Image 1 (cartoon, rainbow, N blue to C red):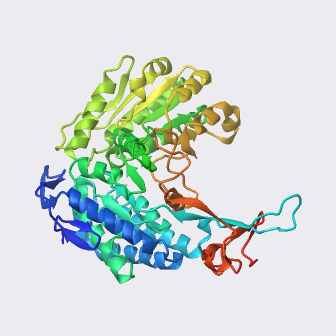
Image 2: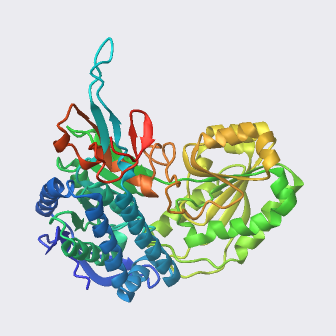
Image 3: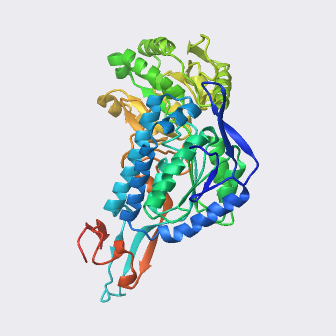
Length: 527
């Protein structure tokens, strides 16, 4: 049941008088649910509980934390149809998408549980003492990753499950040994409360400390700002706009004790279409990219917002087919009127830039909050001269850049900001021929794709979802996949430490059976 209250640890709380509704974009009206915005008192209480919970939770074994994550997955699954109904009502997204995203959310919880049970992710490294070493004895020193403390997580608008309350930031922080306080996204607070109830139930069922998880409601920025500035918060996870992410990043660095902010902030995901791809299957790629641009009403951080090729009759044919194919597709509802409004504003602003031509524009009448797709084209020279054309338009929108030659194409890549993904369409010989272009693209992205579409992010250990700024605030880390847990830990060395008092991961006996680096060699053997 959705109560509209905050979870302060396991306690439901509604001490404030400020309330708000979520919105049903398909019905174009408020939902029936009323949510109580968290007060400063409730924020402080959640932070205090998280701080106290950390002292206990950080000491739990990987196996015990894994049991908690598996229980969260089970409890989310047990919520059944009411969860899917809340999701579709608050997002306007279809039931099939809701079921798929729920499966991904459950799957990543279980993936982190598997990581914890195996245990080697803590990177235990041991250099044993050599008292007889000349000219100086060598000390015993051992190192591993340890959790940093309570984490504030900001839910994302476009993924109410996978990047929100129990999404990758929450799952990875809990796996790392850090309590989590979620600042629920105001567009899907009801969905967030249901997920929170599952997390709390799992915490109680598996003996987790009160405060290991809290969920705070807010329709504005104040609650999030207070969380980031709270002295007991030690890290921040964010998925959203560049403006929002950079504001939090600056705020966290202005604290008396600065803390890390891992923000994933969007991307235009350039696609390079080389001559062989145009010759071999230009029409096929055009059809695939029409679908990719339209997927989820274009509300993916990996939406292909920029397609770049070298001027040719083949590129002309690709552009014509892309336009015809995308106009055939039925537009869909966006997440919220504000997102739709910003989409229309961005689309209009780029459409009036000098040198742009309209490739396709869906102009039939649509229901409120439905996004009418559009594709523009521009030559490479005009694109290079106009930075406005480099901006992301969040929705079913893309620009095709017609470059004069390979040199101009490389100039275009050199001018782009950091991106989450970059794609090359071509063949293996062209990768060698256009090595400088491939290298330029690789320098701008976190994930480089060959002959595919960027939409869709596989949750696995090898995934990198992050990239040079402004795609993310730290390109060394990922927000998807089990490596995401490394955002919430720091290395600690134990020098000449009593053997019995060492963490199990660093003991000579290797009671956890981990793969470790001992005196420079990988081994799971005892010392």
